[in-house]
Length: 246
Ligand code: GDP
Ligand code: MN
Ligand code: MN
Image (cartoon, rainbow, N blue to C red; front, side, top):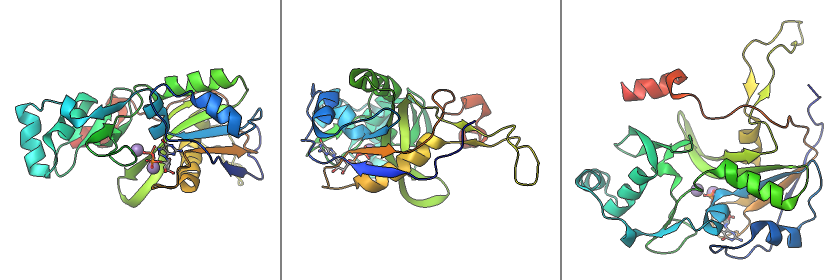
């Protein structure tokens, strides 16, 4: 395993337009920033989703009776609740908020569906398969670098939202420290570090959440493993998830 980087630079890319379906994000990025091999490009899921046509009108959803019931209890629009159910492969919590597993494995409130930065009566679904999106963007840019698709999420046990990785390419999700030796000569047995989440949190910090219009960040100077691991625990091995369903 290579040494971790001793310093790190982050660049906020300015000048991206409001993204619409079909926009060529790699081409836009190429015109604004000179990516180099080894860089880590972080993109807010929101722009990737918009480019992929994941904006929906609430009027497209016909809520079923269960969605209507939950929506009434939550004080939400039943069409929104139906959208969350449609994006879910598993519902972990229904009240007092919807915590669900998306089809691609990420667990999040409201299936990561956003109502900010999209306009009235409209919602934005997460990309259908964010790691596939990351792979496409990486290929289109033709460099030996990493792509991380981020989303701002709440966390269990901790207040406040933070950026997490929902998709990645060209970088391992986890840095495996198992077998490495600590300062007292003891081998590490368990530690797998969620490096893509750590990077996503830093990127999110630079991006902002509101009208900043800065959904792209590049980190330079990181040393990272290139492939392996996932952030999404196997359902069967996720003790907290099992307790929630019990
Ligand atoms: P999320 O964290 O992926 O859900 O995305 P946010 O809605 O929090 O947006 C992250 C950043 O991207 C913020 O700085 C937004 O202002 C910016 N942003 C969102 N949509 C667009 C867009 O279409 N174009 C540009 N240039 N910026 C956007
Ligand atoms: Mn979001
Ligand atoms: Mn955000």
